[in-house]
Image 1 (spheres, rainbow over the protein chains, first blue to last red):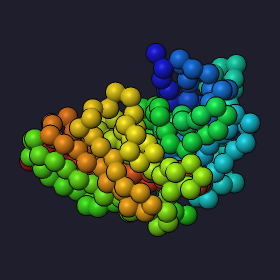
Image 2: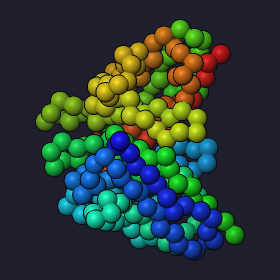
Image 3: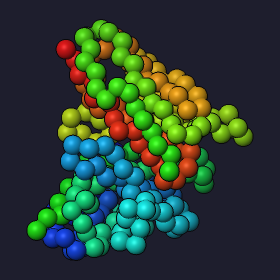
Length: 122
Length: 113
């Protein structure tokens, strides 16, 4: 079955760090463009980060310099390292696959995980 | 950044009716070189992750019922849901993928009366 399963969320104090993992099954992350999208409680969707098959990384301005996306092809897993966390980073973090044609990412998300909740609070 | 604005914020309809959700972008999402609009629609049911419904503004994702129709071009787009069913209760989001950062509309909550 093609799916994404996130893990690693939890409660962390402001200024703290957390690493989210997104385990893929049914396809290989090394051959796809992957992304993280977050949703604050009761709010809308916000794109956070993406990693391309070329290993190029992209970030929203709101997280640039604090978050890092990476990929472990041997474990078929995508990660998001969250550093210097702030209260406004509190959200459910969804891993999502970016649809593509050949080696070109298209930018819409055709597969989503169930999300991992990150709460930043003292 | 491209700003996506949806209207209305919420709507309540009856079973069997037609719902119309609008999405307006702050700049054109039409790419002349391939004649495509870089606009997608998602459905997020309560307690679930978003699900892709429509891409290229009007192409239905595999498995999506034909009651869901996307239309529009340039800066103005519409998601139409015909013959509303109880299972359509959800928040619907539009998203532009014309350029990064990819951005979403604020969402439209659909309820059944």
